[in-house]
Length: 317
Image (tube, rainbow, N blue to C red):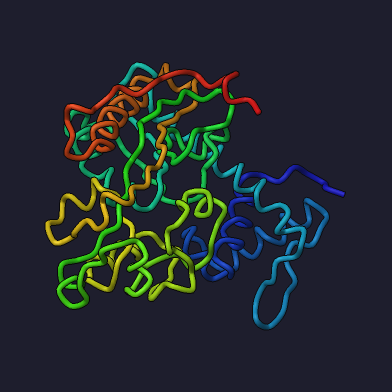
């Protein structure tokens, strides 16, 4: 039975050990000594009245209970970070911290010039950029603003539809000079294709019928989108690329444009309570305008305003 409610510092140490996989790694991450961190773990176990790690000469091994507690500790970490961000930002001030989450490719290839322009306008802004292809929870305040490939389904979010970001099939000029241009979709199967390693439900839902795009056909397999893009630029083979990114590189050639285009439904979202935060709202509006323009590469006349609305009731399922 628990004797006393553990403090956040104990849970923080527990979370660090779970993330780093060792006391030494967790101690380095937190800037603590290993003995101090070990005392935190023992104290947390004593206060909870449970065993969180099995001890062995090889180190600590998390128990099933430790794995079960992990998401709750992560929620505490998110809440703590959100509190710190809120404490640094007055609602009417144009300075403070805003945390953005986006996919790897959007965060590395698309957002940097947009965020740089915003920072020039608001030098008091501090941006935290969390890149992951996993959906972070805005309601839990894992982030303040999210760029999402798909309509948000959580309640109490303000969401704006950016539009469809087009993807095409591309190859580097070096690859095409060495291997020739595919003339039909069927020709792709005789080329070096760059694709996924593990097929997810999202990939299955996005793949058009008739496209020879299966794992067995790939000459390079990876689940890292940035690695796919790097291999495409290196001339390894043929793969998908966002049209807005490809148009920046004259060496990337669009293939089978009349036969194939894939569109990613893209949204920008934030918690509705943050609408009253001047800095967060300004960044949200800035990103919305910039992303809408990005979603229409090479077609200024087709730019459309996104649809902004609160998804309190419309997204309930």
